[in-house]
Image (tube, rainbow, N blue to C red; front, side):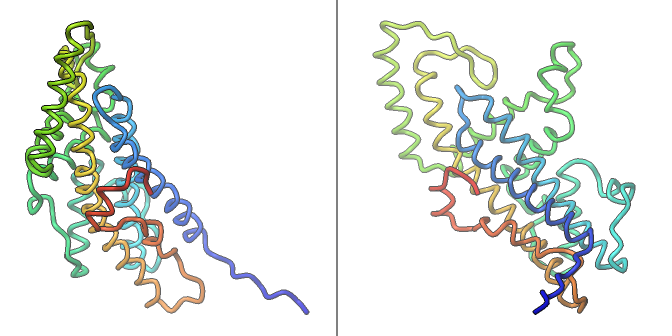
Length: 274
């Protein structure tokens, strides 16, 4: 008996399949690094921004590519056309909102988001374009953006005030003060905060706990944003079925984001993503 002939998938299918693996890995690594980041693990903040901003940019551009293919007889956009969508994540996010509106999908544009979510997108957008070079630029006094770690500190403070239960904040602060008062008698602390200012011993033992309280809620906010983007990706990917092609031109790309679950209890518990 002869073997059945295997389908020949077009290059667009295979390339987007690989892109799906890449964007999913970047987003998952970024979220995991946010959960690991605190004042004594500053490298995790950078790793989080590198990976999540790259994954989010790729996700948004995949949406644009598929939307363009659907409206242009399955022709992928040129490099020039793709660049025309913009470079910063903030601009790309707004373009995604336009596609969602065109396809009648519920999606909150930036102006509909609260101040914290807007700042979060701006932080990632700035990092993906300029501020990832802040440390090197600042050495020559040519830094054009605020230190991303300072932005993180402001973001964490806002999340602590808005999202984290007051009792948990107060407990962490009280425990830190008690432990710090004991350690200060027999120790010298030479450490610096996210803003570069020296930390007291009490700061050094309290701030990591506060960061650990805030990080799950930051991840939850990002998951909510990803959920909206995944819904747009689902809609454009499902449109492949309407084409009635024997071999689909692109995968069901939302399958690479099956782990994006807008379930607060699940998200707040989870430390390793996806």
